[in-house]
Each structure stands twice: as structure tokens, then as C-alpha cells.
Image 1 (cartoon, helix red, strand yellow):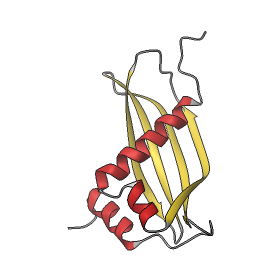
Image 2 (cartoon, one colour):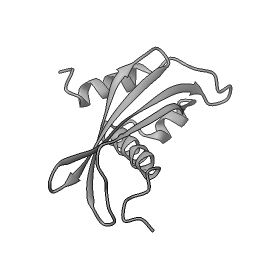
Image 3 (cartoon, one colour):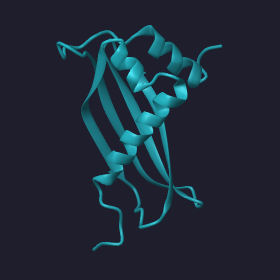
Image 4 (cartoon, helix red, strand yellow):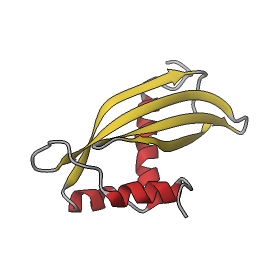
Length: 123
């Protein structure tokens, strides 16, 4: 066994960060489903800049960096604590879809506004 965290786990960390981000902005996955919308991950990337090891404390920073008409992009940074060493960056592109047809749909204004408020772009 390697002493390093398996490379694929970084994408799991990104996924957990998305869930926590959505919870923090007050726009839950359940709310999306209730509105008839789902999200599909259509692209994911990770650039490894260092290594995490068993029992390391990590801080995963997530932010929505771009909104399109039917898609949005999350950017990530993972820092090892307490040194604050950057060990990975990444990106996930998500498409909003109708839950029944699975066809792309317009991203709701409520989501855009919640992100703008959370990111400090609105008063």
C-alpha cells in the first residue's frame, strides 16, 4: 500500500465540497429535485501539486467560477493543514437538466442569486 492518498479520491473530495457549497448557499440538492432539475457532471479535471497522506487534515476550497446558460463551473483548491500547502487544484463542469427528459435547462435565477450573494458579488 502507498502512503499517499489514492489519486481518484481527490474527485470525491471535490464532490463533497460541491455538496457542502450548495448547503452553505442555501440551495440544496433536494430543492433542485423538487424544482424538477438535476445536475450532470460532464467534465472533471485535477492537477496534482503535492501529496496527501493517511490522516492528513485537508481544506478543500470550492467556488463557482462561471455560469453559462445551462452549465456552471466549479473550481477547487485543496490545501494541506496546518502548513496551507497547495496540493491539488481542479475543475468540474456541471450541466443542469430536466429531471424527466434529461435535456439541458436554464439555470434558475435563484441559484445564480444565491451564488452571487455567497461569493459577495451582490449586496
